[in-house]
Length: 308
Image (tube, rainbow, N blue to C red; front, side):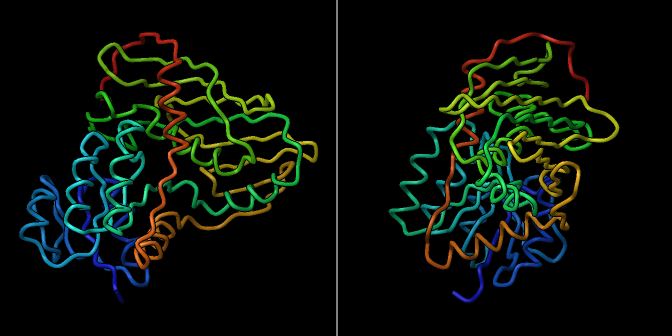
């Protein structure tokens, strides 16, 4: 296969802002179609649903699912059954167990299933991982706060069951955390704030640790206005490491060590093309497991209703 012909399914803000340009900039990838009930792209074949795309659309090799997580499992199953490679936007689903049948389907069909964590491809994440590998880590603090009205305007699905609420951005921080730390972490306590009119939290405070007792805290909030906060601070025996701007900038004791332009989604599609060439899959569910455990352990409080 010399070119991976990709259809985007679900054409909302993230697909328009990130996926279209990333596919265009990735050697060996081409946008061949769009499936969406509400939006289209001039010059690109358009279909209302993934089923219509698979039945009537042009020849494609893969689908990139950018729909809300509540519907991705069925769409991924349909695409895999039709012999297509599948990329899943984060989070890969509404629950952990629903991914197991998809992993099995992909393996049986010799097709790629790629559960993406775009924040892991931020330019300072791998330098941070390498730096921490030779240090003794004393504590970790995550501060991940943003304005839901800016990043998810009018998107009611995010407040419904399975929409994750503040964990939609919070899982980005957890994807970085589980990449840079040398040992697996687990949730020990959580406080979840639910708006009175929503089924998903608008804020969350988590406590996590690893087998050695490392203290890790995470503060997530969807009510931030003004400057947005996407920071991870790690105290070590050889200084303080900070990741800011969502993993774009790494500093040690205030001195910038790594800073590069954001090319997260280009790296995702480069990886997708690489995986599809051999039919290999990449499905790491560690960040989703942490979110699921936060819901299981979380102490819930009701706060003021959310009005978009």
